[in-house]
Amino acid sequence: MSAEKVTITLGGKTTECPVVVGTENEHAIDIEKLRADTGFVTLDYGYKNTGATTSKITFLDGEKGILHYRGYEISDLAEKSDFTEVIYLLLYGELPNATQLKEFNQKLKDNSDVPAEIASILKAFPKGTHPMAQLAAATVALSGVYGEGATLKEENFINILAKFPVLVAMVIRNAQGLDFIPNDKNLDYVANFLQMTFGKPATKVLIDAMDKLLILHADHEQNCSTSTVRIVGSSNVNIYASISAGISALWGPLHGGANQAVLEQLHKIDEDGGDTAKFVAMAKDKDSGFRLMGFGHRVYKNFDPRARIIKKSCDEVLEDLGVTDKKLTIARELEQAALHDDYFVSRKLYPNVDFYSGIIYSAMGFPTDTFTTLFALGRLAGWVSQWKEMKENKEPIGRPRQIYTGANLRPYVAVGER
Ligand code: CMC
Image (tube, rainbow, N blue to C red; front, side):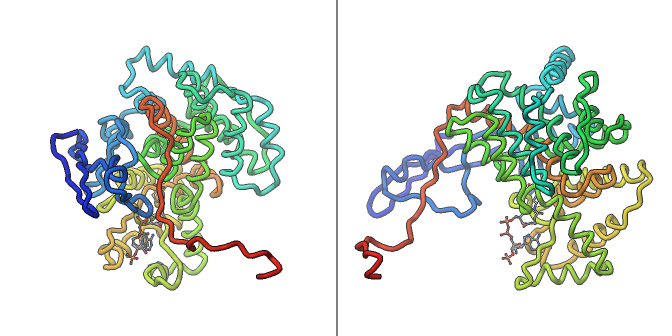
C-alpha cells in the first residue's frame, strides 16, 4: 500500500481508493469500497485489467518478457535447478538446503502410491475418453480416500504432489489401452514418472528434458486454471476438487490444450502440402474462424521467455534423440512467416510456451492427446502453492458482480395463454 489515493466521484458521491504498489512497482487501484460509497461496480470482461489478489509467488512482466518464481529468473531455474526443488520453492517460498530437499523428495516418494480404487475408476472409463477428462475425474476421486483435504495441513499438499506423476502416468497408459507399470519408490520424481509411462527406464536426456519442461510450466500467476483453482478453493472445498477444476480449465485449447492443438495443426499443414503462407493468410482472415495455435498470449506482448528456452531445448532434444521431424521445419517456417507479417507484429502475437513443447513431447514418445496432462503435471506445483497462499491469506469466497441486461419485471402468463 502506498500513501497515494485515487479520488473517484460518481453521481455526486465520492470515494477514496488506496493505491496498492507491488514489490516490482506494479500499481493497482483498490476499489473495495467503490460500490458501498458510490453504488458503482467495475466491468472487465475476461479480467483483462483486474487484479484478483496479491501474491508472493510469481512475477511476470509481459511487456519485457520477464518471468520470476519467488524472485528467481525462469531461465536460471530451467538451467540450474530441478523440478522437485522448484516445487519446494513455489510451495514454501525459499530454495531448500540439501537436507530439506532430501527430506522433501523422500516424503514425495513415501506418499506416491495411488489407491487401487482410483485405478479401477480409470479402467471403467469409456474407450477414447480424453486423458484430461480421466485426470480431472481421478483427481477429484482422491477426495473419496483423503477427505480431509480442505485444510492447510502440509500432508494435503504433499499427498497430491506425490501422487500426481503416478496418476498422470496411469492416465497416459490407460488412454492407450495399456496396463499400468508399478510405482518404483527408489526412483526420483521425474525418472519414475517416465518409467511408469513408457515401461522402461528413462535415459538422462529424457529425464533432463522433461525436468526442464515441468519447471517452465510450474506456475504462471493468475492464469485461467490457477484462478479457477483459487476461486473453487475459496468456497472451502477440498484441494482435490479445486485441482480437478483447474485441470478442466487447463484442458481448453485457448489455455493448456493449445499444446495438443499446435501439433494437430502442424500435422494438418504437413498433410495439406506444407504451404505455411496459406495458413498464415487463413489466420489473418477473421471469417475463417482459424487461429494459429501456439501464437499470442494474454499477458506477453513482446516474447514468451518460456518459448525461447523450449525452442532451444527442442533443437537439442531432437538432435540427441536422433529424431528428424518435418513438423519442426513447418513450425520454424510458420514462426518466421508470422514474425514478419504486419498482422502478427501489430497485434504483438509471438510463439508461446505451447508452440514448441508438443514437438519435444512427440519426439519423446507421448501420444498427442496426452500432451496437456504433461502441462498439468508441471502446473500442479503452482496450483497447490496458489491454493495454499489463498488459504493462508484467508481470502473471502470469490464471487464477481455482474451488470444485468435482461428483461425487466413482467407478469407470469399461464402456459395455455401464451
Ligand atoms: N492467431 C490469429 N489471430 C490471433 C491469435 C492467433 N493465435 N491470437 C490472437 N489473435 C488476434 C485476435 O483475433 C485479435 O485480433 P483483433 O484485435 O483484430 O480483433 C487480437 O489478436 C487480440 O486477440 P485476443 O483474442 O483479444 O487476445 P486474448 O488476450 O484475449 O487471447 C490467447 C490470448 C492466447 C487466448 C490468443 O492469443 C489465442 O487464442 N492464441 C491461440 C491459442 C494458444 O496458443 N493458447 C496458449 C496460450 S499460452 C499457454 C497458456 O498459458 O495456457
